[in-house]
Image 1 (cartoon, one colour):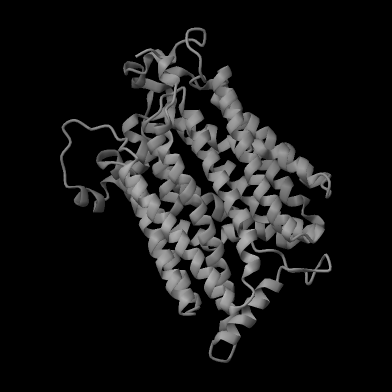
Image 2: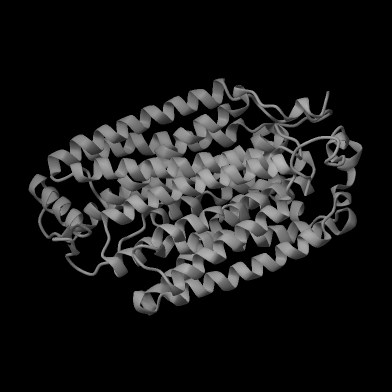
Length: 489
């Protein structure tokens, strides 16, 4: 096939991204709703009386007034709670085991379970939430229980790992970075839509009756969305795994064995040609540190704006605009990189510089008028992780993709958990009067990431691909003069 012809795309190539968008919006909205129910149930648990409609209405008012401004100023100096790192973190931690077991398993038995199980978990969570809201069964224990069950089935973490596997299976070395950029765009836009949507439904919950009507209705809609996603990934998303010749074995027996867990670990530490193992380890470290600093800043960014400017509704709007800005500029950057043949390592360095510049502005010269500039300057930050994942996927063999992205799923849990602990403790210790220390930490870690990327850019070359040179992808490794598209590295 003509290499240039293989650079074109069809609409059906992005069928998974469509359902990923719906699923990401559903998961983010569900997390917001469950966080609100958790706060209300916590308020009810402090009440000595038996919970009834009047007690629920009172707790709804208390929770809403906790972050509501009065006369343009905050009623009390209580920092906003970032919902992204509460119940979702519990779900992420519970997804570790299933990601490790199913990642390697999918390399032999197919990718579909990587999508189906998380959606089934989301459906079970939505159905249980509808029952809890309609029956006013608002207790902390059941809310944590349905979150844990959903996490055990993989949650958004397993779905993302499956999406990365699917994209890697259906792309070559020139188009993979672009496909990862599109996937990142989808999840960022999903987060922005959920944030804007929250501004519409949250003010409507002003009493116990409105909580039942709005909450029950929203969870019903989310249940329908998840059902559409389940049907979509089952029927319209094609299985992307290559058939392994000569393979035999019982899928269930292979799943419960620890054979695939060992393969997940081996994919990082196995020996590769031309010191390829060192580059795999370095890129995993780059991904971990990049996620650490990005999640850490997101953890305290909303509270920082609230503490410094007493913003509540403005903060929510700004977060949604930030997600949308990052999604748009990142997608434009990867498209431009593909057009001009910019190396993935250079793309990652650009993302690092964007993050450092934004952190420096936040640390030393942030004001109400410069917040927008800080958001725009840092909009290319996701390129750090996108380019690192693209490079990783080009260093391993096609039959190792599931194992690779199982490791990525584990790092995707470790990074935000560490960031929550480190950044929140540092932020609380210094509060907003000395919060520059938070952004100085980000600059320091991002500088380390930049140095690692410069080393990788200098020393990584096509020969590290090893036996991939013997496959049909050889024409893709030609000079940029013969074919257009992003460079291999």
